[in-house]
Image (tube, rainbow, N blue to C red; front, side):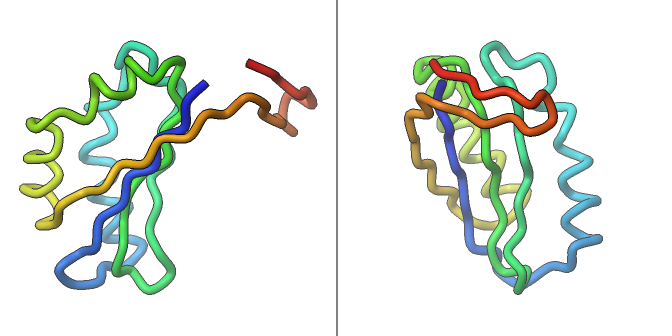
Length: 103
């Protein structure tokens, strides 16, 4: 399992409600993406940085998302260049399911 974390500094801070509205407008883009298990939108406490935490089935599927077109979409929507960091996740604790998963 791969965790990808994206982040970008916003040109000006936004409120939680502004972020929520923007995030909801882009959420359908991420539905039914092959290999994407979860996406968590994130906003820093000061509203100056936004991004996402993505849970992917594989690195290849994650890399297929973060194309030049995706980067252009982020720049157009938020006015900022995104960074993408990848992490291997060999173990996950799920307290809702009350299970520990290993990959």
